[in-house]
Length: 284
Ligand code: GUN
Image (cartoon, rainbow, N blue to C red; front, side, top):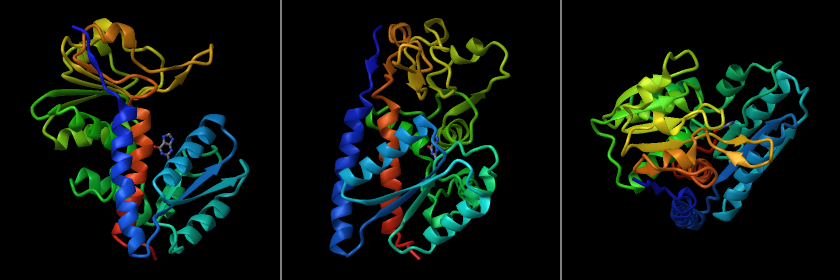
């Protein structure tokens, strides 16, 4: 079997088309959805992500602003900026790019964001709402994965879903969304003994670890769906996923490539969430 390669770029473009129409409608009501992105320090990968986020906003007609703070910024200065943005009626969504420098308390920073402007869905209140099945915002990467599955008419109801990686950003919310859609979910982590024992049973396998090619072909169920969230920069400068794509595609029924799979969806769902925030009229 050779898998169907899920074209995340094409699906993202389609969703952005829907976003463009929603933005036009909001503009007719005098509302321009606005996103503020905060980046602290000069991590090169984070800078690329932030640039892509601002660009995606511009492409659908939204307003965005990027706040670049020095790496030695104090907790108080970051909190003060967020409080100002919380009160800014032109800003509907606030995103703090992670990871933050170690001297900052990420949890406290994220808890400062107004719940209604927390378009990443990382505030404790939004995490709780997600677990209760009453989400205000779905975290962007898991949201993007669910949209890809829907687009391919892949039902997760009653299926074995295995999530490799238990981060707050991807693994945990991903597992929760799959559970809520009726999957039987296993969450694997760095301590999991014999990872392959779990992954081989996965009708739907989501890998979000951050280690190039750690999932190899024999670990993939024949006819399964493989979603690769990994984005690893190789020594030769190329990007690679967490899955051995060439091997896995010979066993799976569906697979996402890297780049061009989940990545474009993550940015797009951020745009969707900010538009939703603006539609709710959450601006202070
Ligand atoms: N760093 C890596 N992924 C993400 C994300 O989805 N949101 C934020 N804020 N930071 C990230």
